[in-house]
Length: 496
Image (cartoon, rainbow, N blue to C red; front, top):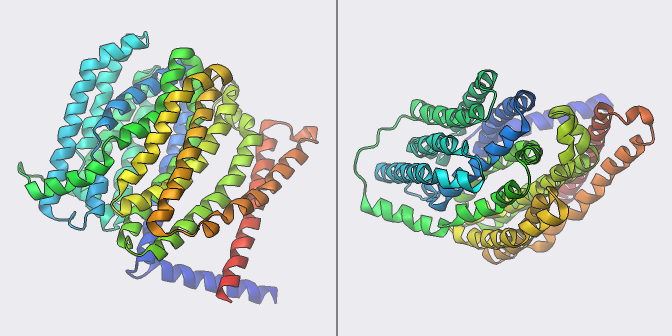
């Protein structure tokens, strides 16, 4: 009887996957795209994870602290004039037309060159502000990455619009892996922050090169006024959005860099990076698949709401147990991955994971705004978060130490998320009772993780880092089993 049940379940799963991965329907395209992007991203993140483990043993924490400031300063200028070329082409029904692609390419390249020139000009003042003259040449070289990003082939964005995700996976993740390998190689010869800066430039150069190899495109020196006007109309909704996002994401780095030594900032930034590695994987995967998906059904609010609720519930069932796991095992995780000295930033790691979970939920609403051509709705949310960060980051950093930076982020993202929930309810007639339903269930199944971790602490043999992590992982798996059982039961109840 058991063999027959297993055989039937396997047959049903095989039939479901075959239907999901074949055909030209929206679901099939999303599944195939998710498979390509997921595989590419997993491989890239594995390389990044290995690189981080190696570099924290080759380079001093000061190098990561300086690099955090350089990337933050460069990103600040990079995002002030963000015009959302990729999003504009994907969202616009006429984005595949030649004159639209040409206008987008020249807009992106012109913006990138202007930004790079400006950063090179003000680099000495940024270095003087942080009392480190070494930052001047580092900042100037880092701007090469901005130029390479701006020169990206427009047809690579069209490949994503047409849901040809295999091409985008090769470009994005393939270029990332090439840059990672170059960074690792450089770190053996340049035992300082220069290895990190040149590695970032190499990543952007590799992606830009692959974009033209895989999606050949030769832009002519001309553009259509109508296409330019359409792209800039969409960009009006984005104006200032990236800069506000940067304030939310990087205010903690700017403030902590003034309050604490570079070595402590390096510990903090690497702890944050450890949490952001899997989160960036999930966020990029969802962003690259869900924006084209929601764009295809942007006028069908019922389907938009159903998909958004399903994705958000999945994120909760995966994320809440993982957050509890980090709470109990974060110290051991940092000690094993980066070394014992990095475990001093455990509190920052836990707070970062909480921020990341709320941010993932918030991003699903953001994608809906973008798909409906209403990015200005998200801009208001980010404005609120940016203001909160500006007001509370400094006092939080003074009161709570390094972890104060992430506590400020947590307050800001929760407020912004609640604001967006209210906004999307008015835009798509979202049923909030259905939307909130998964929250208490996710918390309930996560109790198993806490119970397993607390039980393990009663045994001295399980008090060491590796056993602690193994026990925590087992607790997460138990929570995921409970979550899967609930989903299956819920689906069966709906079917009946």
